[in-house]
Image 1 (cartoon, rainbow, N blue to C red):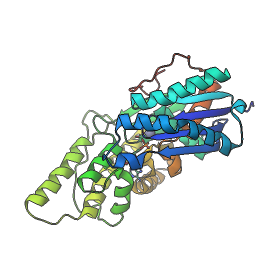
Image 2: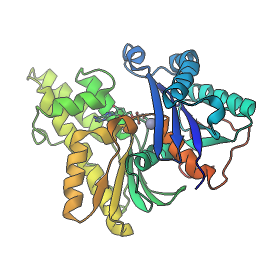
Image 3: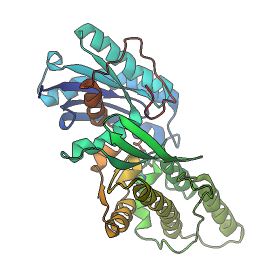
Length: 339
Ligand code: KG4
Ligand code: ZN
């Protein structure tokens, strides 16, 4: 098989990243410049600030990726870039940079869907993984259950009707004073709390759908905190964190296992920032294994935003001949499977 070296760029939110990926599975470098420290001051990502920071660092990040991989810009076969979904200004920085590079080098440009990238992180981690499998995508902006039938073929089975799972983590963390980003902090604090201390609601739809809803859960946590404050009762933050987390994990686990049953699939891969959650990994693995279902997850650095996952997704497009036009535009609301 032909060896294809892809330079991939990711700038859809608050990480500027560039990676060199060979044949979709071998990562020569994966440089990530995080803006978390800057956005922490504001309690969340400020889109204007994110775009400006991407512009400042993108060139250095790409140069570092090439240097670390031990190659030059002329050794690459294609330029891949996230073109949606995400913050439009942030996406445009990476997209314009990638287009300029592809044009100057006369190499193919491959626009990649950010969510497909998250799913493909699993191909890097698990070298022999092949579709079909069920993927649970849980990030700060998205919550999906996807049936990946073949490379580039995604069917959405369930999705959130309001907040994303990571968004709920971030909002609850802010409410109990843990700061941004809340996911890892709730994950850590929950280890000291009792997940059964408070019975927060698990949203269930009666129409047989495998969709999620997290805004009711978030409100229930806020109401609980208010009530405790009004009645001058002490709040055990670790118990709140653990009980909230348990409610999230219960519905994620239940719906993804139901999908496997419905679709007769025996393999689950998880993806996205929340996929690095230790309790989710443990519970999903335990419940699935009882039913003979295998669970795979990428290492934490491949769960959160990074360009290596974009390089992986791009490779499977490249070998199918899916090259993007030079007038490709950023699509902040790009849907899974949409071109
Ligand atoms: O995939 P990602 O880096 O960015 C998006 O595309 O959204 O995901 C970031 C999200 C944030 O909401 C963050 O709080 C959450 O992933 N997250 C976690 C953990 N690590 C990151 N949530 C729960 N537990 C974690 N360990
Ligand atoms: Zn992401």
